[in-house]
Amino acid sequence: MSQVFNFSAGPAMIFPEVLHKAQSELTNWLDQGVSVMEVSHRGKYFMELITQAEKDLRNIYHIPDNYRVLFLQGGARGQFAAIPMNLIGKKGKALYLNSGHWSATAAKEARNFGEIDEITIVENGDKTRITQLDFSDIAEKYDYVHYCPNETISGVEIFDIPKVGDAVLVADMSSNILSRQIDISKFGVIYAGAQKNLGPAGITLVIIRDDLIGHARKDTPSIWNYAVQRDADSMINTPPTFAWYLCSLVFKHIQSIGGLDIIAKRNTLKAQTLYNYIDSSKLYRNVVAKENRSTMNVTFITGNAELDAKFVAESTAAGLQALKGHKVLGGMRASIYNAMPLEGVEALIKFMKKFEAENS
Ligand SMILES: *Cc1c(COP(=O)(O)O)cnc(C)c1O
Image (cartoon, rainbow, N blue to C red; front, side, top):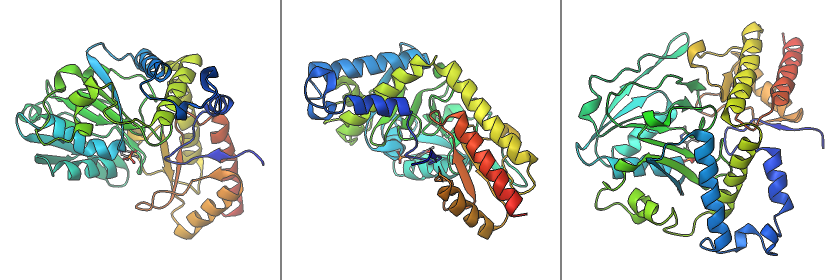
């Protein structure tokens, strides 16, 4: 088979080194003669695995000591409900910043659990851009302020952290977690489904400040209750052990290549290279304002739906997979998460040039 590059938005590509490592020990993990999938999650070896995984993640992401790390199930959407169940209690109100599909979906789910105010912070004019990030004057009315720093579908990223004074800031980082270093202490909760930048689907990372745990509504199911999960090492029920194991390999791999500084440099270079080419081309357009262009999901269109469809068909045949944009937007989307090498972006640009030459 010739070389394939996978631009899937999620589940997305995983570092080949991680897959090879998993393959090499698939049937015989740690010389036990069985796979990691077939042992007790409470056994010595698996407990060592999760302890080390948390250590590695804390080290990579500089997670302060007063934050807990949970590995849960139910994906980011599970957290859309878990966040209000655990955090709306004192004031009964939360503020949701709407920047696109995922932040709007999170707000909709939260309405089941409390009074939700929503403010649109995106403008879809000539260029899509984020309009405001300072909520320090109103934030204290709310139990928390929720936002999505990377809107995966439209390819809109928010690089500055919203100003919320002393209020609790909650972020859905499903599609840009670990893409660069951030100041964790600015956040109350960060959560992310794993299937974009952390590993395979089926496991969900929650990083939460200590003092925010323990205030869940009385009717909160145990699996969604952060205090219950903290006290049970995120194992109130059988966890997705294989997914957790793969995440642990991803953390090790990120460490081995030099951590998030290297990852961030690579991500910036990949995104810059692709956006620069798109801006220089006559056929393709990206409609996001420069300051909000996602480093993870690069959207582009030709302006002609038939030509877009042709692009998707021909790029797929050329080994450039999953470039079709999300169904709500159409066009194309190249998801270039941490695991995508620069060579993938270069191969995409080479194809885009050829397609432009043939179709203009
Ligand atoms: C993919 C994605 C989701 C949905 O994640 P699930 O794990 O499938 O629930 C939510 N938010 C963002 C920003 C995403 O990219």
